[in-house]
Image (cartoon, rainbow, N blue to C red; front, side, top):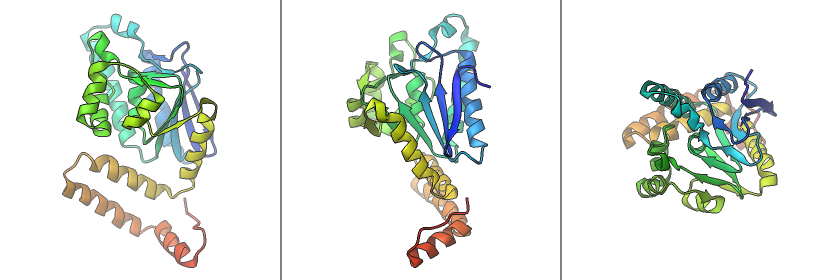
Length: 257
């Protein structure tokens, strides 16, 4: 049972909602609950898509509770970053699509977790940024790597150097978020998109995610090798045969999973 998260499943969509008022600042306890909740959804065959969101109206998350760092030593910072990086690796290795539903303020580690999701939805009133430069720090949840891959080196450096917050429209313009919707429609939009993904063949979704996520960091020919491996494996599945036959028969496919 999580103390600082709401973990639920709705129509094959698993939600992880931060719930530590007033601003969803991460304590040690909350930080440890996130990978546990993620593993719960990844291990549940009834869950096909996972969403990161917030149970609070005004804040997605402001990242780390700075009292954690004021009360710890160098080894404590090392442990904190280690837990964060383990979470990043698990998110990148997820076989299930990961979505983000951002409303209110998403800064620091709160935004960083969002960066490792596949599709990022934001309310039009959301504000996003990486202000760690203001405390003489860097984003420790993989943002230095994710932002460079997501936005390109110049934009990533500018965002990290400046430490300023962007509105949802600005964030969308540079590719930091993918979809902007009215705040009152955010959950509905994300749930609807997730349910659409949940109706698609899980094995093919996992293959797409692996090819793109791993392949972007590999030399082109090595990325092709990952693609070949996944394509050959999918070619041996019942869902691939069903998909081909359904297309030729001009009928909707019936997936096995």
